[in-house]
Image (cartoon, rainbow, N blue to C red; front, side, top):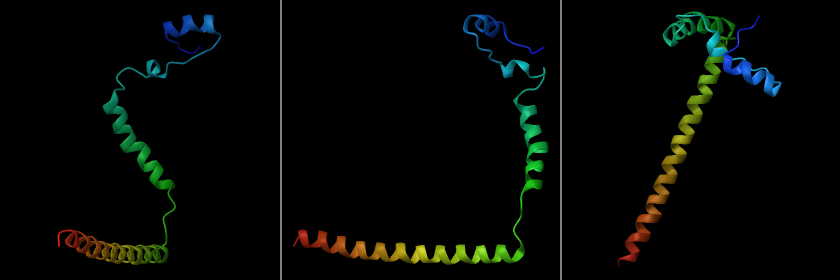
Length: 97
């Protein structure tokens, strides 16, 4: 038989809807620290084993693409900064002539 909180049992007959209170069903002594420890020691390693890791060649290729893209964006932002600085500084300087 499913364990249901008394407040939920009362609402069950009135509403015709069965609602489970999952927090009340936890075994005693299963506080947040124990759940966090179980997450780190059991669930995380299980998920890491499911990961499909890239091969060495795929990893090198992806890293190269990222490095080139970051350099490109750095140059682009630097150029935009220089152009905007030149335009705005000269525009402000012309206001006070």
